Length: 105
Image 1 (cartoon, rainbow, N blue to C red):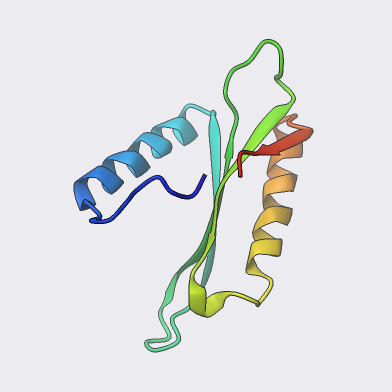
Image 2 (cartoon, helix red, strand yellow):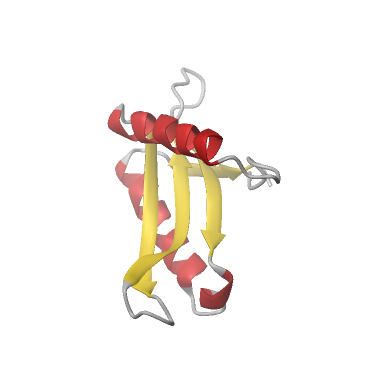
């Protein structure tokens, strides 16, 4: 699921959405994996990729995890970042007992 927000982007709406995801992380219902890399202009580290593993409570599918928000900043694409994020997500999913990963895209 990529299109959570449509232009014109509203900072408060996006911030509230990410704050809700942080609460899910704290509750153990989600893992968010970030990739950092130096900014090509400043050299400062910044987030260049993200992927989320949603783990909703389900009596019929406690083995299922949902891959969400696999995003890589355009200038950092084609460098293996998405692959690295997915490998980390798969490791996290196995740790959580989620052996079937599903994407809604």
